[in-house]
Image 1 (tube, rainbow over the protein chains, first blue to last red):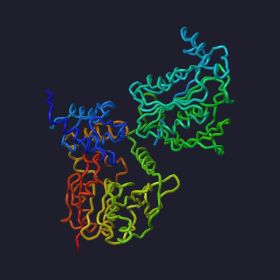
Image 2: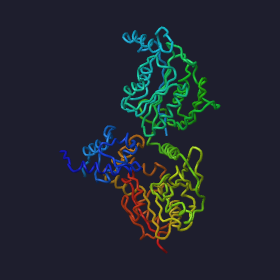
Image 3: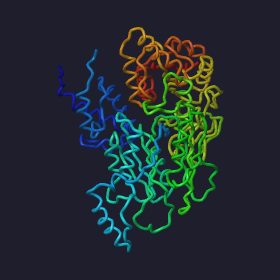
Length: 91
Length: 492
């Protein structure tokens, strides 16, 4: 019984956009939903875990990252889609 | 750091699958004739020869299991492919598990394989990278410049990545430097020979250093690569890596190496020598010290670690302050020695996951030193794995262990940790060079023994503390297992 919180996705997008400079340790023009994480922003596979953990912390959510793959990291928007679909319910 | 996990080597017999193809054969002759015409060349009778696409595909099947996605593939060759017109590296990416990012290196003679390894080294985030060095012996035209031709078609695939049986520590390509020694290169394989011999060395797990060295007689490149076998059993095709969670000594050595290899920067400029008082630190813009870090995120920090940073032309000498890459400051300091700072010279000290790496006694001595160098009102923030979290994880069978395992896995720390509770409990004591684990009470004891007043000790949350700029240094990767403790030095 999956229930999608419709307010959640915009919050996730905002959070990703805010967290990216911290995770990437550099100042950058505010990324958009279409910004490509690897090509445009220089995200690497080691920074991806950090971003997911920062998101969990920022949004007080648990994300199941086990079946994440490269395509989910295409843009800020695709990553937000992944996060919304892979929340672990609070126990 | 690039590790060599396993290797495959092969000789390819005639006829090659490609040239024997009933449809491609006739077209190939015409195609090659057209390609050569502008150079005033005509093809020899189009028989024999190998394509690196088919050779590479066979080597991939030898060395990569279907469930092992490869992130990066580099194809290296000197003799032209018998089949022109195909983007061979792209083709190999198509047949290789993981559809890796693919490069081809050519026109470098024997240096091609070494360049391929350097490319693999420059992608440290790749869990697996595959270097394929190939040569084929038949050409259907004269080469414009003389070059040794192989006596047979041969190929070597080196599966590298973040774990393996041997560490590839340096790959150097120069011009006409004398080459010290090399593995024995088989005759008739001018371009794959050195790698062929290296692949043979993998059968023997004895710890030793192997130097792969070669020289290109035409181009004058001398190349060498240092490969250190660390004594792990040779890696069978069935195993993903030689990382063994049940051998803490080996893991410890591997992690130490990892730390030493990671301690690099582009530029080190010495800016100050000890002792450091408040005035000297003030001139440098330093208000506090972050231990267990090569580069601090805090703009007014002096970062410090027992492992010195290295630049290509220099290594940080103990105790001196260096400007790193023109920005952050670093000093190599051993926390088991007195700290080279004057009394009361800093406003804050931060140390994440450091104190558990020394004995309780050494920890107390260091905390005593930290108290000495803190100015009155100064803050010490410590983070360390919380023994209580591990005890709760063991006793209650709660989700901490399973989440922590996933997190370590995602962080690329070796193969999945065993799920057994006793393993998860033991590893925090015996791995990573840990010497003493703390719960809050034990930390209060140590701080009290170091002269801090126990009523000034406070347990904090992740990134919450007396000084937001210091608490902000907490790394999110560790927030599942850590406790955060602060103590303020009294004014008296």
